[in-house]
Length: 298
Image 1 (tube, rainbow, N blue to C red):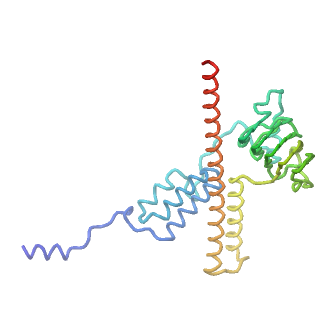
Image 2 (image 1 turned 60 degrees about the horizontal axis):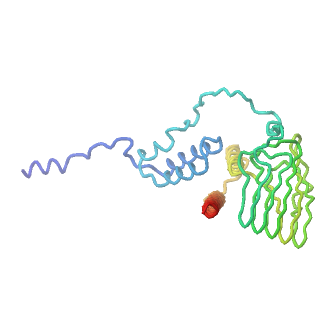
Image 3 (image 1 turned 120 degrees about the horizontal axis):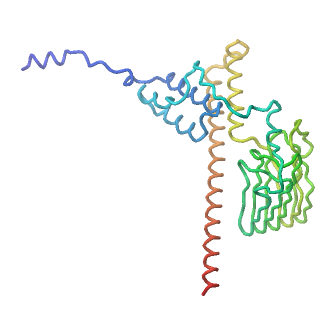
């Protein structure tokens, strides 16, 4: 009996499969690099990127790392070519976003009375968009919008309320609103538009209220811009154009990237909170309207 036990104690440990091997920090960094490339190429959105990146730095073995990039192209592997019916436009896409209108634009006005409204994402801004806010607020986001004409007018009337117009880079902005104990933001005027880009004219009236105008990139564009800067820096470092910064410089770069990611996450959280508030407000309005109908029938 004891001899058998001694033989077992002296036996070598059972071989470990490849997926059971412990992953190193360098392995996790390589997987994170694949995820960053996938975000820059539009294969992952920010929510998926953050979820997978968190899983990367939680992983302890190769078996935990492999599924994270299983549906993404491997570095150096050319993905299949997909034929699209509409080719990218050489002028950056402005001509493709000015779609014209037959007078039946799907969204030509918005009203907020002690509430709020949003127009954002993929929508068509009509030649004239009228919006009104009384003790409320609204957001007109044109960053991903199409335009019914080369010049669109956003007519804002804010009474003890506020509105915000968000335009993408490259668009010319003209502000012609009038404020009484209120005001219109003229900070984005004077920037020339890109060739072929639309012109946005902000008009209206603000009484004890205000209308803001700001120029912003989308989250995807900011992420792509950051990835391009990082790639250019790596290429310059590989060519020897940048001196080595050492561990402190790398730590500062990592801290900057984390700060930008946190800022984007906070913006996404604010947008989701705003959407929840809008949904709750719509439900309250629907319940109030139903109670009014029942009272009228009674």
